[in-house]
Amino acid sequence: MRGLLPFFRGLHTVSNRQARRKAGIVGSRCGLCGTQSVNKPQPRFGLLFDIDGVLVRGRMLIPAAKVAIEKLVDSQGRFVVPVVFVTNAGNCLRQTKADQLSHILGVPITQDQVVMSHSPLRMFKKFHDKCVLVSGQGPVLEIAKNVGFKNVVSIDMVRESYPLLDMVDHNRRPKLPSTPVVNLPKVEAVVLFGEPIRWETNLQLIIDILLTHGNLNSPHQTHAIPHLPLLACNMDLMWMAEANSPRFGHGTFLVCLENIYKKITGVDLKYEALMGKPSELTYHFAEYLIRSQAMQRQWKLPITSLYAIGDNLMTDIYGANLYNRFLEEKAAIKNPKAVAQAVAATGSSTAMPGGEEEIDNMWESELSLPSATSCKSILVCTGVYNPNAEVPSDASRCIKETVFHGHRDFRFDPALVEPDHIVQDVAEAVDLIFQQEKFVPQ
Image (cartoon, rainbow, N blue to C red):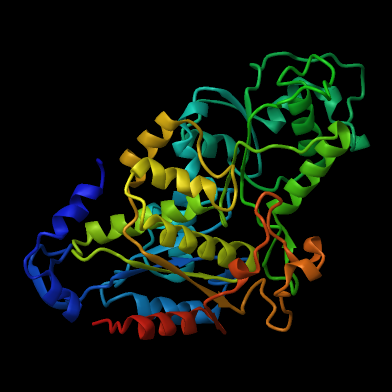
């Protein structure tokens, strides 16, 4: 096994390992001065922060977030524990989101501390050379190329080439008879980054692409099964901004797309992959970034515990608990390929890239085996979650659609939406974690 595994194997040969573990203290080299520092508490845990509803609401910083960050950084502005910000947002680059967080939180954040809903797409290499149609808002073409796609077509490009296809808005219909301006390559796959601005346009053109198998000069073929590969990021039905109630998210757009497709064809829309929380793939990628931070700081003890702080039962809590279930099950699995396939087997059958060779390459070179053995979920009350509403514990006695706001392809399990802890805000969450870990920053 290549990648990080040899590093972790080497750690087990250190003769005074047990003494150091008991003390929770190791010697490390200061990243700024290069000198040896001793008696520094070393964390054996990492933090996964949701952003909207936990740290901010829209563009407004939640006051508790400032308090939490102050607890997590030293006098030089460096984090005293590994921290990754895991968001289902997909309308910008990781670097852009890191810059935004740096400005809002007042501490340096790098792109290697950020997981966007589209971040795992760079591992789906079998699609990188195909012509893909991308949907969303923001710099979608730049985002697509940043994660590895080389031949990208946007919804606007399709609309310009085929002006007669977008007919809902009467003011945008062609004024004069128009013929297609066919200058686009045939679309071979569809990638959905996030909720678009003009839903009617995106829904219409995506359906057109799927029902013509990428050939927009031909009529719909409603019995053409299977349709083109479809990869979707961000399954949030709703998210919390400045308003008093949650707003529609990309998950709502996916509900529309799925129901339109099924109404027309009579069969379910199928996804090649679903990314973003609560997909285990997203959490495994975040765990990899946590391990990378520990290595960069030359912290020698492996990170064994993760804490995921979020405001949404159906994404943050569900996803953290689902990944914790995977971590518990993977302990008995020794084969790296089996670990990768185990991720795909839990929650959603469309969570992973396909093909054994791709799985081998992805996990050995990109992620390696996780060192974490648990992922605890902490729910805050500053976002989507309403502490006055309860989720019924008996799924058979409730109407699924009114309770489970998760994606269609993720089964409802009451145990997965039960947080390990509920706190008022993110500052209380950090205090709780430090208490649980008996960690005192110096």
